Amino acid sequence: MNSLQFDYIVVGAGTAGCLLANRLSADPAKRVLLLEAGKKDNYPWIHIPVGYLYCIGNPRTDWLYKTLPESGLNGRSLAYPRGKTLGGCSSINGMIYMRGQARDYNAWAAATGEPQWDWAHSLPDFMAHEDHYRMDQHGTATPAFGKLHGHGGEWRVEKQRLRWDILEAFAEAAVQAGIERTEDFNSGDNAGVGYFEVNQKSGWRWNTSKAFIRPVRSRNNLVVWTEAHVEKLLFTTQDGQPRCTGALVLRCGQSVTVTAHAEVILSAGAIGSPQLLQLSGIGDARHLTNLGIAVVKDLPGVGQNLQDHLQIRAVFKVEGASTLNTLANSWWGKAKIGLEYVLKRSGPMSMSPSQLGAFTKSDPSQPYANLEYHVQPLSLDAFGEDLHAFPAFTASVCNLNPSSRGSVTITSNKSTDAPAIAPNYLSTEEDRLIAAQSLRQVREIASQPALAGYTPQEWKPGVAYQSDEALARLAGDIANTIFHPVGTTKMGRTTDRSAVVDPFLRVHGVLGLRVVDASVMPTITSGNTNSPTLMIAEKAARWIQQAHQPRG
Image 1: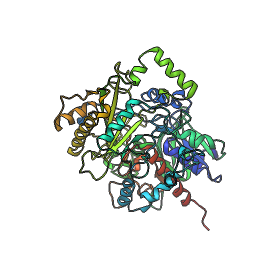
Image 2: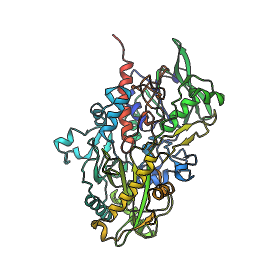
Image 3: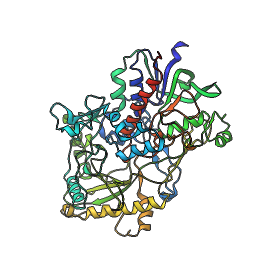
Image 4: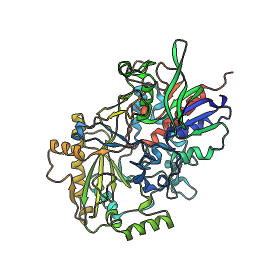
């Protein structure tokens, strides 16, 4: 039985969980168990950058969630990818390194009353694990850049390994439309147009399993279980409060009880963490009782406050341009692409889903950049379908700070049943207006002289759509998730009835239990959410270690 007793149990070996397991197991006196419901990350397509196409929607690597039909999307239900393998979503995502904006973290500090969440205090936690290529021995980092970025950490950041003339023309068109160029999206203000930097290493995907687990796998005090599905958390009573003592785990067809002497840390993500809390009796008491679940703690905020970035994909046909559509439309073209990757680790197989990015305002009255562009030298009807036969580029644009709020709610007391996911996209007038404004802005950029030589023709949404109402409805027809769910166990003050965890990520009213992942964000970051989740985990690991140091 001793082998099933640990100091820390980390549930979920995704972005946050891998870093936590690394940091907490650095103390050889602390025994750490890392639990992952998925398999090892030895599936080849995980590691080839373009392999996200074969990982998303694949039961080998994806939970295969779907949203409920969304009224804001005109009744459509969306696939909702979540990583199910070592590395979690870092094994299937777009690999974009993006921190967001300083204002995001200053707002968290204000909302929670804890200054350690502000930008000045969060920047060192970003830098602690960063390994930025510009700071390599022959890199191009300036002293100013070096004050904002780290080197020698586990999380590799590299330049993308290919360029497209059509994307450079779009960047110049954006400049002509009033968007300045930027060389660093991660300085605290990401406004501007430039190329995304990516979490890759020499043309391979760099996921959190390779970064944080493989280098320390030999530690005797670190135990990693894959294909270990947590059914529920376990509790006792201490000083009149519930205390989380461990978990019931389904492994190799057997239910196994594992115990944590110090803490259980939930890092199952914005869907998995609220699901597991509810299954374990933490959530809205009325809902849990109706499902026959004994209430451990009534926290109605569990599963609420879901936020996500919804991207609206505008497609333009072009003439005389090299795009992936035309390069990959023959067996010979595909063979050339494959050979380039095998020989050089470059070319389209080294691509992230998006190469060029831009951050700008939906209208001049906005106080900060509230739109993010992902520009791609390709087009298709829907994710997972074949590329179009004609040359084209796609300009996907999303509202960085949606006011719409959704929910994640269990529908039964069975851990194997998927929860009901209702993002509630475009449910506010503000979000619908910004959707319309963003499509007009895409048109403005496409009309600039820099793109004129390619004769861009709007294929989607189509020039027939002009009014705010028509564009907002059309956005509901063509928009899709950009896979950034957050907020479903938000942190907040003890007086905030909707908060699930305190500013140090401890579950309100429950001892021995924290949540450390994107679900704790009170508001979504102004950009891609993977690296902010690592920052959260870096901060949390330090707090956990401090809480369990010997006194004396």
